[in-house]
Length: 479
Figure 1 (cartoon, one colour):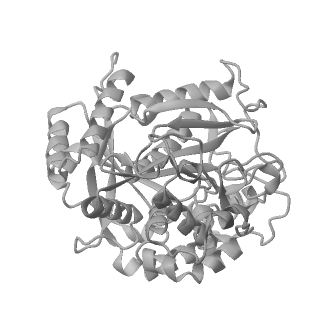
Figure 2 (cartoon, rainbow, N blue to C red):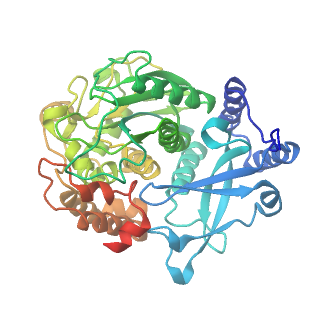
C-alpha cells in the first residue's frame, strides 16, 4: 500500500521554540498550577495528531525514567497515574510498591519529532505515596517545595545555569560495551575550539544545539572542549527547578542525537585516564524581587556579604556535600590536580583549582561558580543541597576574608572518604531526612562495593558497567 498511513504531529523547529518559550514564560510568571493543567489538557484534546504524553521522573541517584501515556487514556486518568516503585532501585520495597505519578503541567514541552518521534509531548512528574502525600525520596518535589517557600516567605528566587561537559564516542552503547583493555574510541582528536565545520563532533554539536534551541533552552554558545572529542553547550540561567529539569533534558537530547548518528554521548566524569574529565560547573545567584542580591560593587570581588555568607556555608560543609557533588566511583578520578581539578576547598576569583570561583561580573551576572560538580550528579539533589546549605547551613567560626584566601583544605580523593563524611553529617540528615539520607548512602555503598577499591591509573570495567547512569537491573542483580 502506498502513502503514509500515520498522521502524527511534527512541528518545525522555529515554531517549537516559540511554543516552548511561551510555556517557560507561564511558569516564570507563576501561573496557577490548576490553570496550567486546564490549559494543557485542552491542548491535548484539541490536537488530534498528538498520540502520547511522555511523563518523566528521576530516582534518588538521578537516573532518568520515562513512561509514555496514550493521550486518550491520559485525558481520562491523569489524576490516577501509578507505577511500580519497587522496580526503581532505591525507591519503595515490593511489599508497598505502588506509587503515584502526578504531572507537573508547568514542565510541559512540545518535542522535536526527529529526536523523540512524531506526535509526542513531554512533562516531568512528581512522585506521591498511595495516599497522595509527597514521596519522601522525590527530591524534585523537595526542590520545588523549598524554592516555592523561599519565594512566598522571603521573595527570593534562586537562579542557576550549568556548564555540562560530555564526550562523544564511536559506536552505540559504548558505555555498556566498555572493557578496560580497549577503552573508548574517540570520534575526534581535536582539542579546545578545534573542530572543522563538517567534523563529526561539530555535526553532532550543531544537531544537539538545534534540538536544545527548539526546547527553549535559550542557547548562548557551544564548542568542543579541552579534551579530544569533548563538547559543551551553554544556555541561559533560569530558576533552580527548571535548571535541574534542563540538565536531565540536556543529557537525554545529547544521547539520542548521538545515537541517531551512530555515536554515544557520555557524561562519565573521567572516562579516559590521562586527559581532562567532564565537569558540570554550577553557577548560582539569588535575586530578591528581581534584584541580584549577590552583587555589591564595593564588596570583595564584587560580591555582597549575603553572597559571601552563602559561599562560606558551602565551603564549611564541602566534605559532607562531596558525595552529592561527586556521586560515583569514577567521579573521584576527575579530582586530579594535574588536570585543573577543582579539589581545593576554598574560593577564588582566578584560581580554577578552587572549589568555588567568583567570575568577573556586573550587577546582572554576579554569581558563584561551584566547579567541583560532576555531570553524573542527581541535579535535583545537587541544587536542593547546595541552595539549602548556602542559605541555612552552619557557618564556621572566625571565617574572615584572609581565611578565605589562605586556608586550604582538600575534598575527598575517593568515594569511601566521601561516604564517611556524608554518613556523619547531622546537617545532611536534617535537610534530606534520615530515610533519604540512609537510602542514598546505601545506594552509593552498593555501587562502590561492585568496583575495585583502589582507583589506580586505569579506568576499570566495573566502575563503568556499575555506574548508576550506565548499568541495568540485569547486570546489577548478577553481581
